[in-house]
Amino acid sequence: MLVLLLLQSDGQHDLCRIVEGREGLLPGEGALSEDMLKKMISEADKVKTHAYCPYSQFRVGAALLTTDHHIYTGCNVENACNNLGVCAERNAMAKAVSEGCRSFRAIVISSDLCEQFISPCGGCRQFMREFGANWDVYLTKPDSSYLKMTVDELLPISFGPEDLSMKKLQIQNGH
Ligand SMILES: [Zn+2]
Image (cartoon, rainbow, N blue to C red; front, top):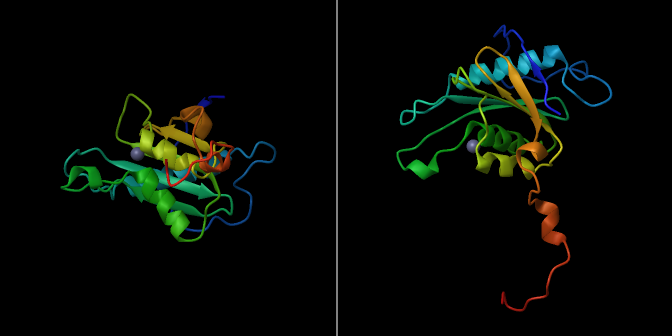
């Protein structure tokens, strides 16, 4: 289900801080409260200012909320060797995994695109899928409006870690 709302961003929050308690989450569907979403958008907007993008001039920020209520942020980091650049979303997820967090509730993505919601690239969709298909991705605009989708909606009929252990033909020596 897609939900479109308009929020204001206050830009008052620190990066990578622990979210206390469970008040940021609504009961039931596990949807983020308006306050938590506002905070996440603010965090994504803030980390976007750290983007290293001398080649594309395309700044992206991501704020990732884990199920144990930590927020990890990431920006895109480009490289003179083009294909070594890393997206904001993957940087945020790698930071979380590096700190021992592999269970994700939502990620908010921010860019400077004014007239459309920033959309994660195919590589990041697959990277998200590694950690489950049923968590939320918020595609935002600089005015803090957003489009809420799930990983499954962004990457339907996906291939994930479970597929590696599904029944398959027997092979010998890789042939
Ligand atoms: Zn990407």
